[in-house]
Length: 351
Image (tube, rainbow, N blue to C red; front, side, top):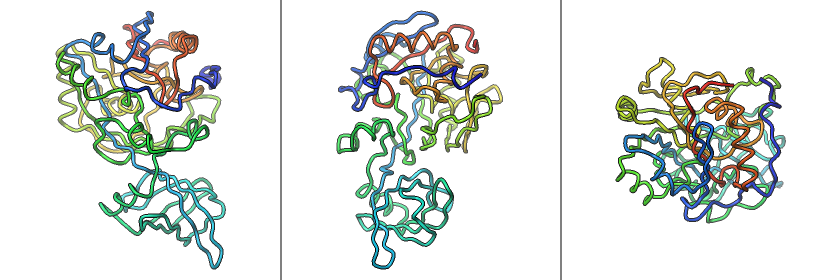
């Protein structure tokens, strides 16, 4: 498989810079086998069946973008930092601009009493040690940081107060993500209540989405691509709920590629088990799914690993048809865009 196989032309006007409001009013493309139906996210209460199980990623996005200054003697320079992931010691791997002008030992000062020291640096990122930890760090970050919008939105407009709520799911619980599980942004509490009343189950897992989700694939042979790692957990309760739903004949439908990657990581033995750790699972056509019966997801970037994932689930030829239909019908793409519900036929691994 070549990278160009996953390319397509997307009109720039279809890149969403704001989400639909209310959330479930976003368009929903239902692809069931070879059939395509247009609707809205509200329609999930009519599409899903009693006993189906939605797998939700309950990660919470942190305000990971920081603007600060670095003083060196009498010289003061601006530094922009995007936190990427913490390490076990509590230090943070981060992207910084201008990275080339930072040196180990520099101290960067932000607002809200937050500072950090550069303790290591590579050609691509740096490692930062903050002056605060625990709840004090979280409180200061909440005051000093901004939501880390994807680059294809950030280049079109600045982050603002609306993004604090817009770029967070209504069931976000565990802080640690620097990008939202965006398919989940389409749910509000009333829709979740109506689904529960119908008998649709929900199981929550946690995968802290990293900035690596936006990294481009740089190899021509996609099978040689190395995925970034992200921390996740499938608790014993979540594994039990998903296994019970599947055993009873319900469909297991992750909401978002992050939830799908996590449960398939936890099911590599053939059966879903409780699991915790870093996953760098790469899903592309030919992948053998053990748990997933469908997927709710947004529309993804050309040449992205996420487009490869949905092609693994539905088949490359069918996803070409789905995306052509979405573009022709002016569906909105990417993180703040519209949604699709992908329900493959019996052959999930066709190319």
